[in-house]
Length: 471
Ligand code: GLU
Image (cartoon, rainbow, N blue to C red; front, side):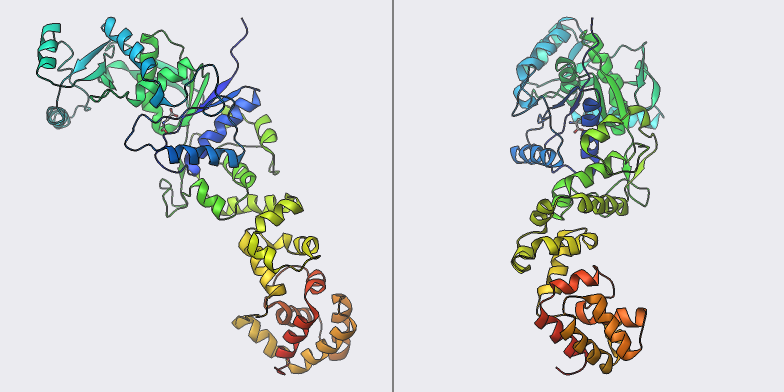
């Protein structure tokens, strides 16, 4: 028999916009599937009706699409194992509840929140790990019927075998052993009839023939429960890999303050999807090459054995590095669209290509492009304190010389600067800084030779006149 095709999945709960952490899980899963020419599956885990929304599931599909993470099985495109929204799979779950109950592997539990809280308290006071005490585990069918007649709504608990140890090899963290005795009988169906996470998540992975589950390490302690369930139902257990979490520069879990941005926010800030992908692919996964890569290139050298066990540190400077790479590599047409309507409104017709080439090395976000468009085409130029100092230091005579040089060398910055140098005797940075500052308001920026070609002549004149103190 052929080995099963690699199938990975992303199984988000649509209770908010996806952020860096969960999108990295999606990315690693998509890369793992693509590397083996396998299938990347998307499943929407929307059993928590109160917190899930269609808007969020639409948003997450759009975000994945924007990032170029395409699923080959799942919502909108279908597949052999749908439906792919858990809210539509109640019949499937009912079948497996029945099977577990028939084999006495699950039982109804009527304990109230209050009773459970008391039991937890007592266990903690006795220095025992809190777990379900098994109060309802041995109710007779008559006792169960009597409680049901009282109108009590039970949860369904899975009967955990007490004398068994659960072993598995985690694709990231290696050998794992858990004692069955440490796991209390856990809830697989809530009192309102909805399936609990452990249950539907594991059942769906098996039924959808997922071979590799990559997910956050916060799920590691769920895995032995899920393995027990799958074994009890004689369903195939996938290979699990638990990815280390992302922390902020302070070493604490990512928060809003330390840069836990949603994909939407990154997109709104003007990040390129492939910049985000190149950044995240290396966040906790070692690549030999530091080159900016396409999704296919990243996939070809992706390897779960290269996923780190220690927390991955989010570093916005690295993200910006990949953004720069993306801006440098983008086609002129893509860059133009990315710069946005405000820039489109400023740049002179016929200068689009030249403008893009001129500012490209100095833009990482659309707002940078807007800044340079305003510098070149805007009426008003604001000089900051440092810039003003440079202008003052150069003196009015310097700018008079620049004005006459401009009349002969309107398009040729090198010749213009040479002439100013010849007339004033000023050279090096004392020559180039005041010219740049007078014409652009900035000490640094795109190549002057290119900028001068774009700058409307009237604008250049006016700026030099202002520095010469004549307006
Ligand atoms: N819906 C779960 C979550 O978003 C999925 C966990 C998993 O990947 O197994 O945390």
